[in-house]
Length: 137
Image 1: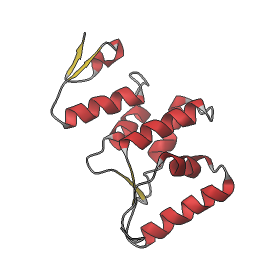
Image 2: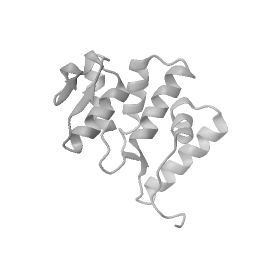
Image 3: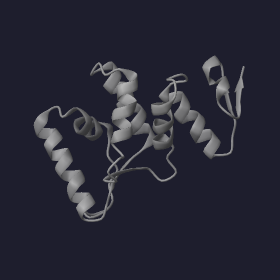
Image 4: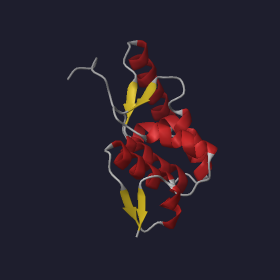
């Protein structure tokens, strides 16, 4: 793989882009994403990175959950960063921006991944009952 290959961002890069901290690394992350996009290679973010960044924003940076959802959704707005192939996080983030926060982001991503695979979700989470193809045990 060469420097011109498409690239998936890990959680550390996504967090630098969203928080701007530390500033020097955030600047390098932004330069990297902009350069890749300018070369016709938008950067990719996986569903797993979205969930990890969500928890880090909330637990380590003190960002309220709704704001973390909005920040992560905004990451995809300009097309420089795209969801992974077959990823469901962007759809879930957009839904959560317009709806209540229950069930939470990770539960909704798990549900959406199973639905994408044409499976049902079995759970003990009562809040998940409102989602399609879900069995609450």
